[in-house]
Length: 330
Image 1: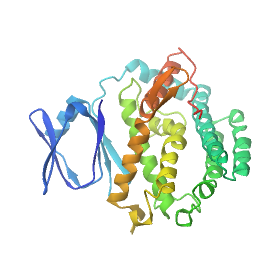
Image 2: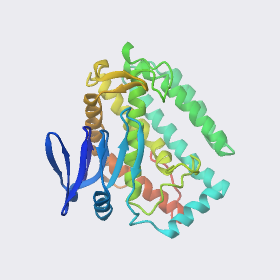
Image 3: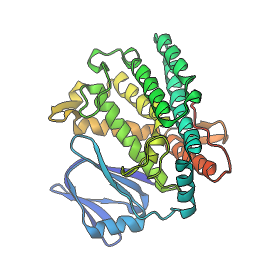
Image 4: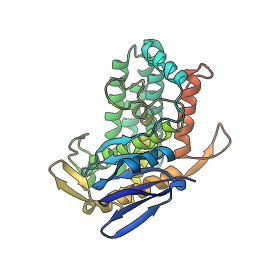
């Protein structure tokens, strides 16, 4: 079973024969290539061409984040599964407004229904969220009526704004009050966690796309333009509520992350290294958690679930089966 590697300290990634290792003033730490799916770099890490060539041979993706926890970019090895046929199908569906809208609408439906599942989960545990639930349901009814991507994005944004109003009720902690969504820079602890978690999820989905025939540069909900990747942003919308947000609620609810894990910087409020490590560990726990998949009739992990979502999209693009976004059932 391949696993991701996270590097928080500064140093150098190197190749030695058929292995790679991380080296800093504390010494060398070898990284088992055969067991590594991707590498996440948060520290100041140097790499060279020889190292990158070996990553390409091994199919290992390298994700970079800066010191403010922002995603910077990805070394995406030559696509060994990329299919010209699939790229053409993605482009055809993107360029046809009706076909694009059909797929984009399904991403928003998945996001909305999974948000509603989270809300209901906490209503069943005594949280007073009926007003938020009603507001989201009314907005959900508008999704099918959207005539273009702009209308769809507006409805999706309104659903998420309503959903964020539930965070203070769910968490019930003054130091983690939401106030409003702020990104760059995050203006409070909760926004910092949301931004960090979303960035991580974008890279997780990107890594899973790499293992399919899909091209991450052609999305449907988010506009395909000069931005490097968009399909991972689309698919992440479906999974943010049930992966990132649930991780955040767990971390804060169990006091695993407190205000002591943050610091102020020129870029707003950022997580300290200790906080990042706690978040990453809990996220990996979530991604490896298995549940019984009602369609497959067997247990799958959340990470595997993301790949299955991509396979469903492939089937839609080649006309084999209509894509329906995953909706959690707890």
